[in-house]
Amino acid sequence: MTGIVEAFSPSYAQARTKFLEAAAAAGLPIESHAHPLKGRDGEDLAMDVVRDGPADAKKLLIVSSACHGVEGYCGSGVQVFALHDAEWRAKARDAGVATLYIHALNPYGFSHVRRFTHENVDLNRNFQDFSKPLPVNTAYREVQPLLLPEQWPPGPENQAAVAEYIATKGEAAWQAAISQGQHEFPQGVFFGGTEPTWSNRTLRHVLRQHGAAASKIAWIDLHTGLGPSGHGERIYAGNDDAVAVARARAWWDGGGATPVTSIYDGSSTSAFLTGLMWTSIYDECPHAEYTGIAMEYGTVPVLDVMNAIRAEQWLNLHPETPADKAAQIKAQMLAAFYTDTDVWKGQIISQARQSMFQAVDGLAA
Image 1 (cartoon, rainbow, N blue to C red):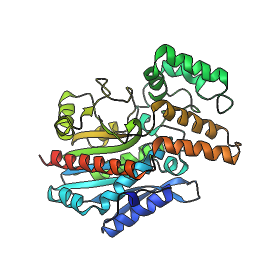
Image 2: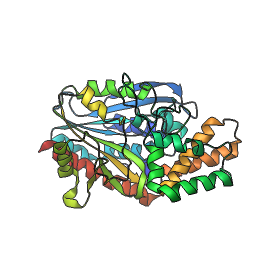
Image 3: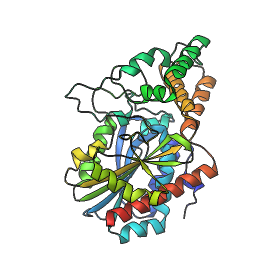
């Protein structure tokens, strides 16, 4: 049995090794989808898929990590621990539930300590119908000139302009303007792209293959960066459908102890978003009843998270940055999405494990 702390890793390369070794130790087949680029340390990158349960299982639970690259430092730990967790594996097996672990949806971002893909796309804004006009984020147009100044850290003038925006419109408006996603500024932040990314296409293939036999599918997608430190917010991840929302709340709200929030009713710490990854399940597995959440773990205050993202994107646009300054920006980015303490890791594992047990009970009902 791997301990909680040992399930987490200080790099993508180590995280991938631990995941693959855990799958091999469990005697499970490994399916690796090679990424076209190399990692930060020259390592191979891949979206690795492990299925624990029969191929023809009618009930399927998906547990995925690193939709937003750097957030995989958390999500991978959950997946590695789960593969070593005999009680959890028996729980799912006895209920007739197959578990599909998708490790590193965005392996490039995971390795390079980026939120975005190698195409500079926020994967969770990339699931649009690109044959139609794309959403326009007018609020982002307004803040775009402030986000990535010529120098970093920003000068007094930029800091004053940002402070004025927040003082006038509020912190939530600043967060929403930036994080909602945009399709106009390819070098900006939270860019949703103008075509499907590698991760988008690869994930769809995985869902078609592994969801074909399932009549019920649950999905827990692991995220970090919003909310109080160590708290796992269960954010409903599905269409604005009252029946599906009610089902998710019945499965995961723990009698009110672990409420399920929603971007539709304003109860979530997340802004209202479009192009979300979970929409792919409706396209690729239309035959299945789908119920899903994003498990969103808090790290540091949201303004610190936004500033870390701005700094890292600035670094991406300025490769000539001195090594010591680049390292400081990357460390700031990692700290915004991964709290490297034993206490935080324990909170992550306990809440993820609880949500997975809840999902199995829901699927089996």
